[in-house]
Amino acid sequence: MTTMTELRERLASSGHRFEIMGVVNVTPDSFSDGGQFETTTAAVDRGVELVDAGAEIVDIGGESTRPGSRGIDAETELSRVVPVITGLLDRRPDALVSIDTSKPDVARAALDAGAVLVNDVTAGGSAGMFELVAERGAAIALMHMRGQPRTMQKDTRYDDVVEEVRSYLVERAVAAVAAGVNERAIFIDPGIGFGKDLEGNLALLRGLPRLADTGFSLIVGTSRKSFLGLITGAPVDQRVSATLASLIPVLAVDTAVVRVHDVKDVVHFRGVVEALKLGRCELKYG
Image 1 (cartoon, rainbow, N blue to C red):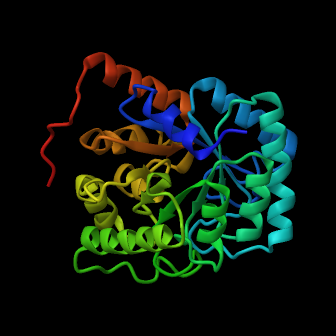
Image 2: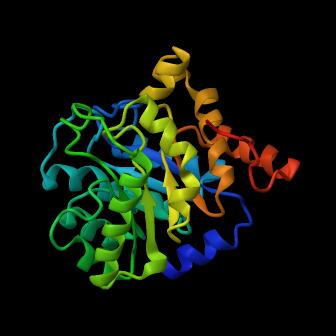
């Protein structure tokens, strides 16, 4: 089983400007690919495909967090994700697996099955999540979300969205460390599309260096999201080029993971960036 330390070492030694987290939604209702990988076989095949395409991490989730979605019980979520984790690791034992959940019981079973990272959209909001991650020596991704998925788009006003998101994530990271989580095992995610409007999402992408200066590695998830559709008019299944453009600000930070659906396209994007030796992005935003 891969440990958190091995996770960090493997990512740090990859030599890439950013790492790629491929998404497997074992759900009937996710916004971009709900129902496509609902069966265990389809989801495992998809995970293998993402690993073979070049994803450093595969993020497996059994509960949709799209705007307006309602939660499911832990038993249903467990029945969706655990067989996929075990099936993927049976076929690709060296895969790095993340579990996309906010439920400690689901996280515990996923870690037992071989996951090494808990991707929590509530930033450790459930009692016992931080303690579990600390006990297992796992990593955790803390995401900013205003409210719950079913209500998060009702109020998207901020005085300074970057500073408010930054302060919240630092506060949650400090709480995680106080609970015993290794500081190097914490990722922070600004929650693009989670309780933000178009301008808020763009401001957060421009402000990635302000988030990175916290010292925590970033996870950035823009893939196929609705704000890209607002800009381009493209439907959800035709937003690959828009997704790639939205990743340009990631080049302005030293360490990041991008959470995406179209892994092969992002691998190609990354390859060209590295071939050009762009290094730190010098584009002017605003």
